[in-house]
Length: 296
Image (cartoon, rainbow, N blue to C red):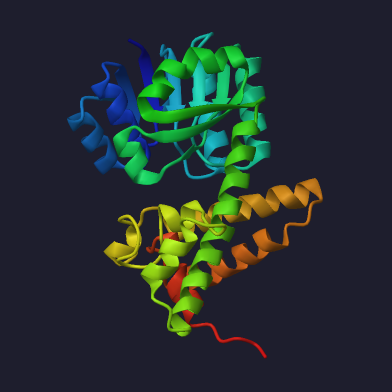
C-alpha cells in the first residue's frame, strides 16, 4: 500500500480520497476549509496544516483544485517539499498551459507528474467509477495506475504532459453542445405535441443517440434516473460546465481554431448561469432554452 498526500477535499476530492483510505492506502490530507478537514479526519485520513506537509515523504500526491492559478500556487508549495521520485497527480480541470507548467516544475525537481482530470461527477467519485484522462510520461502513468484504479473505472493515457487536459476540454465542449441539442429537441417535441417518452424511445435507438439523451436525459420522468428527476440538482453543476467551455474557448483561441458551436454553447451557459441558476445541474439549461423566443 502507498503513502498518499491528498490536497483539495471538495465535492469530488473528498470521496476520491475516502476511496483510497477504504482500499488500505495511508492518506494524509489538506484543505483550506476546516469542515472538509474534519470530515477527512472522520474518514480515516491524517490531516495536516499545509499542502507542503501533505506532500512531504509521500509516494504520490493527488490534487483536486478549482483552477489553474490555484493549482500552480499549490505546486509551488508541494514540489519543494516532495521527495525525489514522488509522482504528483493533478486531477483538477485547468488550462493546458498551466498543466504543462506543472510538468516542468515537477520534472525540474526530479518528480513525476500526471495531469489527470476526471469525468463522472460526484456520483462517479463516490462509486470509484471515474474516467481519468491522463497526460504525462508512460512510466509515471504505469506507476500511478494502482491508485488511479481505486478511484476510477477507466484510465486513458492520452499522451504527453497536458494531453489529459486537452482531452477533458474537448470532451466537455462536445458534452455542452450535445446537451443543448438534446434540450432543444425535447422542447420542440413538446411544442409539437409529441410525447417526450416517444421521442426518447426514437432518439435513444437511432441516429440522434448520445449520452446526453440515453444516460442523462434533461426531461423529468424520461429515461434513466438523472438530475432532471431531482429538480435539476447537480450532478454536474452548470458553473462547472461554463468553466470547462471557457477553457475550451481559451484553447481554441490559442490554437487559432474556430469552434462556433463551442462558442455559442459557452454564451448560452453563461446566460443560463447569470439567470440565477448557479446551483443547477448543467442539464437544467433546458429551462432557459424553453423560454427563448425564435427570431423571425
